[in-house]
Length: 361
Image (cartoon, rainbow, N blue to C red; front, side):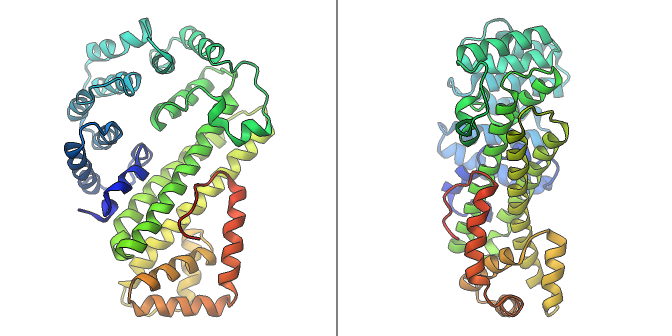
């Protein structure tokens, strides 16, 4: 079993993140992760989030027929509307037009509950029916009592409580917000965007906790694959938020401010994961690291000396490697008071957006 799932409960921390990977991982590693998830699914067939994750991994591999069979195995109402949308995507990948129509027809003609209506809104966008999309969105806003909302501190602090799309997984949520911009539907759009961006940032914080847990419980070398996957997920997240930053026309400055803060928060997580991966690679390079190695690491990753210190402190605790002890000594020469300052810096990062409780500071 690869280190990404060194402890099986960690699978929950990567749930609903594989759609963020794009083309950032090798097919062989995606296949390895898929095999592990399929093993978990076989042992726990009612774990439907794992089934959705398997479908996401199969989508990355371009395995449309297998992805359809994976969706067939989810025999409950969980995510029924999302399954219809995903069926349609896979049938489209197989050039099966009738399959696409059959998948979307129930959503477009008779969405039976709030979740299906959210997915029907996306389905209307897929077929290019703006009038239907607008009508469905207006119905959702009205039924949820979200009309004419003001961007208050309460809304900014908990945007997921004031939006329509947060019940969807990231793939459909992302598509729904793009649809709001494509059709210039402004009602509640800023809040939908704020909710997605803040939850993406929070999710990368959960993965940060996972990586720390892996280092502490299995060792730094065993965390390498997890770091590689974390880099891919956080890089994809950074790209999504950057894309919204570049296309968004936001009426409320507070929302744009939150978007930028969360973007910086994700960037810092990405830098942390990249530093960890580079440190593990540096240890096997054969050359003796020095101060210039630290400065180059910071330039290449966009990280900071406090992140390097955090990782080296973890590595030296959990692994007997003279290179890491040597590098930690160099960092302490550069900044003798770094332990105290690292705690302060960690507290400052709370200003960048929502974060989960951290297992390690």
